[in-house]
Image (tube, rainbow, N blue to C red):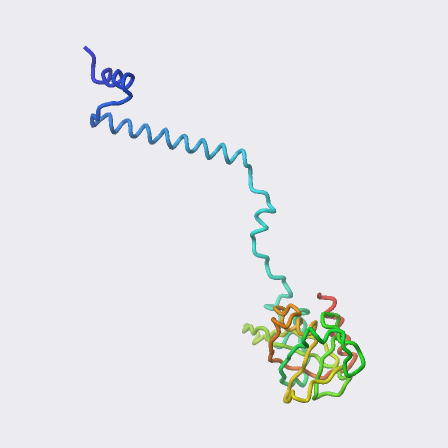
Length: 225
């Protein structure tokens, strides 16, 4: 006499099915689950071995670049600091102004000083136009970027650029306004890409300095470019 297990095996071989006995249904479903899991694990392992680790360049391609380390401002004492050198700004007579930028169409034209206007030049000292200062004046312009409160005191950081007044603004421009070359404006606003579409008006300050001081600051900027 055949037992229940033998009957089930015979039925499975002949018809490919087994009657739904409570014990058999649980056992077969459990076996099928285990087999399926092992098969899936084997497929994943095989694919992983065939592909190997992701190349390093593919990871870096999607990584956001880290901001450049300019200087350790946390170790600096309180005061005003120049970007990008990290040096303290001297205690000068800073005058409020607004900075505009030449239109691209002025590139190559002759300025009031007789020098050609170069829109994309970034070699300091750079040119600017002003109706408030004599031609040939040396100035340093700055724009506030950030303030950091520390145990040592408040630290303020400025983008700066060395300028020489070599042009005049149109008479319709009244008030405190300084028109910068494209390269000078880019020093104060890195979002500016030398096109008229990205130009705007910036609030800032300037101070009149000597030629020696202007050349020294410009040299420090070049060393940190």
